[in-house]
Image 1 (cartoon, rainbow, N blue to C red):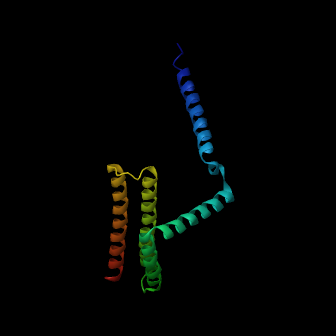
Image 2: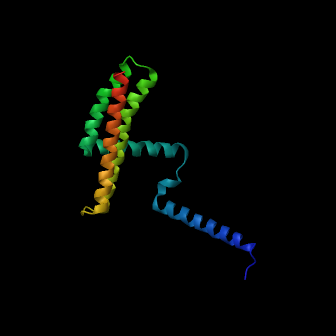
Image 3: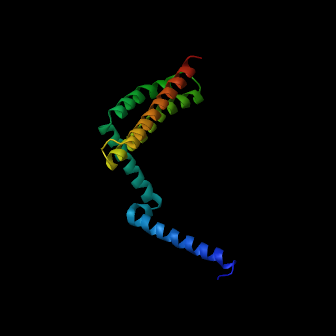
Length: 149
C-alpha cells in the first residue's frame, strides 16, 4: 500500500491529467476556443453582430423592444435630469434588450433539443419570458421614479 504522503501527489496527477483531457476535448469541440488577443475580439464582435441580426430578423418581441429603445434612449438622453438618472433610464432600456436576447437564446436551444412538448422545456421558456416581464416592470419603475419625482 502507498504511504499516506504519496496519495495527494497521485490525486494531483490525476486532476492535472483530467484537466489536460478536458482542454483537449474543448479544443476539439470548438476550434475557436484557442483564439486569443485581437483575433478573439474580432470574432466575438462578428458573432455578436450575427446574433443581433438573427434576433432582429426572427423575433417579433425583439423588434418591438428595439423600436421602444429607439424612442426611449433619445428621450432619456435629452431629458433635463441628472447624469445618474440618464444612466438609469438608458440602462433599464438596454436591460430589456439583453434579457430578450437571453430569452430568445433559451427558446432557440430548447427548440433545437426537441420541439416536442415537455414540462421542462415549457418551464425553461416560461422562466425566460418571466425574466423579460420583470425587466419590463423594472423599466417602468425606473422611468416612473425618475419622472414622477
